[in-house]
Amino acid sequence: MSSVLLTLFSELPDPRRNQGKMYPLPPILLFTVLAMLAGARSYRQVHAFIRTHLDRLNSAFGLSLRRAPAYSSVRFILRGLDAAEVERAFRTHAAGLVDNGLADVPADGESIPAAVAIDGKTLRGSFDAFHDRKAAHLLSAFAADGQIILGHLAIAEKSNEIPAAQEMIATLGLTGRLFTLDAMHCQKNV
Image (cartoon, rainbow, N blue to C red; front, top):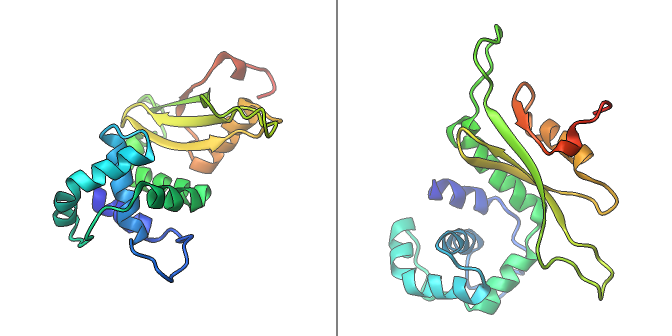
């Protein structure tokens, strides 16, 4: 699984200049994901995780990083990434995991299609009064059978979950599935 992520991360465009680049992008992204799975919630904690486990990470993935990048380097790398490209990489990864945990729907309709839960959440701490920016609102699709997050979609400031959910279903190709959504989606014209 991690080697697949390493391959997908190698396809992401690197926002940094080639001059003076000390750390390759794919391992830093993979190590950041692993650090977050281990409980890291800040750039300093990601740095501490990589520093502590650098020898094991190098041997596990066949790398030869001499030292862990500073937390400011990790921050610079992560903040420079194109969010849409990172989302595409994670969606590709999710699509390769157990067929997204979604069973095919037979033509006779005898079996129940796999369930997909779609829900929106407002990100805590994303409100910015100084720049007059509302809190960020994300919509997520979760395959219940495979317990896999299929994708995220940022909801526009002047929109709501209803058109975003329809766009996500179409984008991910989730037609013919059983969906669970909030009550706001129970409208005649949807």
